[in-house]
Amino acid sequence: MRIACVLGPKFEDSEFKQPYDSFKQAGHEIMVVGLEAGAQLEGDKGAVKATVEQSFKDARPEDFDALFIPGGGSPDKLRAHEEAVKFVKAFMTAGKPVLAICHGPQLLLTADEFKSHKMTAWKTIQGDLKKAGANVVDQEVVVDRNLVTSRQPSDIAAFIKESLKLLEQVPARR
Image (cartoon, rainbow, N blue to C red; front, side):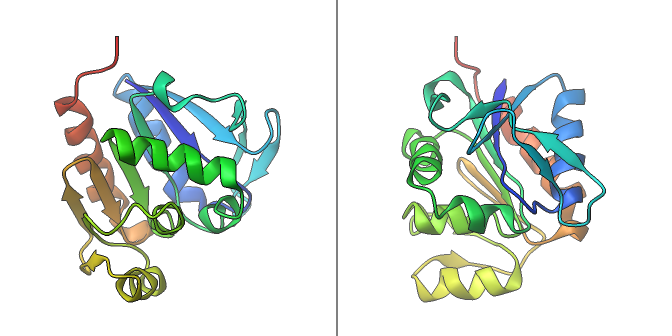
């Protein structure tokens, strides 16, 4: 499968790197999509760096089978940009797999794509989602149809396991 990874500044190092590596090892192709192609991004802890391979202006959701949203400060930075929000919304509207960890559901909140799904997120984001009317639970991982969500770095193993399981169930685009 071809997975778009939306990434902005100050992403959570482990929430990007560990799933990214696991998805690649499972045979999936991952492209980092962000605000500016060629931009060098650094994780919040400074341990991981990533390069934006394609900008939101050039990326087309229909060219991807799934979406991966790492947490940290990245989702909050990206949701201030309409092209990022529209990109995320397109995956949810199409029912494609969306894999969001920690602060990742902030992008779902801004895209108004949260009310029909059960989900989890970082504890402060859980509160925001609940106030907005989302069905939020405090569990290490929640799978609801096309959406996999987790709360924090300690949930990464469960997040990866359930994400890979969902990706196996969905036929790749031709």
